[in-house]
Amino acid sequence: MTTAVAFTDVSLEGKTLTADQLWFFNENGYIVLKGLLTPREVDALKQLRDRASKRAEEVGGSFRDGPAHYDVEKLAGDPTGKTLRLRKIQEVFKSEPVFRDMLSQDKLLDAVEDLIGPNIYYHSSKLMCKPARGGRRKPWHQDYAYWATMNTRQVTVWIAIDQATKENGCMQVIPGSHRRGLIEHHQLEDFQIDEAGIEKENIVFAEMEPGDVLIFSVLTLHASDTNHSPNPRLSAIIDFDSEPAPTGSALGSNTPLRSR
Ligand SMILES: O=C(O)CCC(=O)C(=O)O
Image (tube, rainbow, N blue to C red; front, top):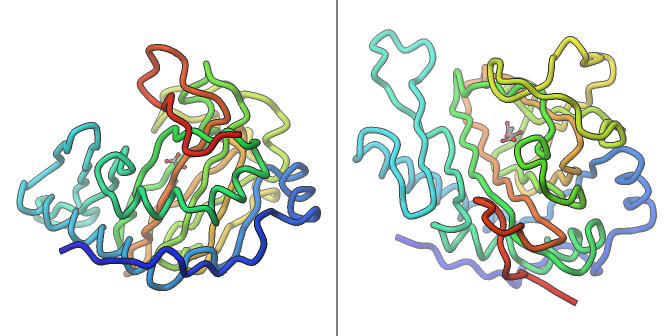
């Protein structure tokens, strides 16, 4: 059952970020906007996760819905080795209207416009479920490394749906790392940088409340730990481009969500 959500429940006043917020982003490569999504919107995304988890259970594993990928993982520490949990939905923007409507709202695009300019294109998206007790870690990386032929004027928008804490694997960022350019990535535990280069004292743990939004440059180094807590850590992720996708690109779009 799809829940109707009133997208007029705008909680952010004004269209654009303040001069202080823009300065902070330029300096640090990230910014946190508190309470951008309403509790009702947060709840609608939780219901999306619950519906998708049920579908994965019925299918008994990972499955596709058009261009979207519903990926399950084995529950860590489960002695039967058989318990599956929905890990993420890749390209969820293309399969779930609730996600698409919520993540292309003006209150989000207004902030994105301030960071990448008035032409905004959808690039890619995920619903990250990070299940309780074992949802896997994401090693240090820059998103740009995954699609390095594109313009670097892109941002990743990461929205906390559940509370994100150190214990359940909140996002971690290295302030100022977006100014280092693209760092070499290798296929190790994942596609990632050599983590010996991470200065632990510089890590900022982005602990967030449901509805808070973290926006970072696609060159900002980030990671998240395993979820050691008894609670899931649901988040919505969407990347926006300032230009149309190059011809033949698997990701991105040629139709702007917003243009001058
Ligand atoms: O949500 C997370 O834990 C990390 C996700 C991430 O960095 C990514 O998918 O590129």
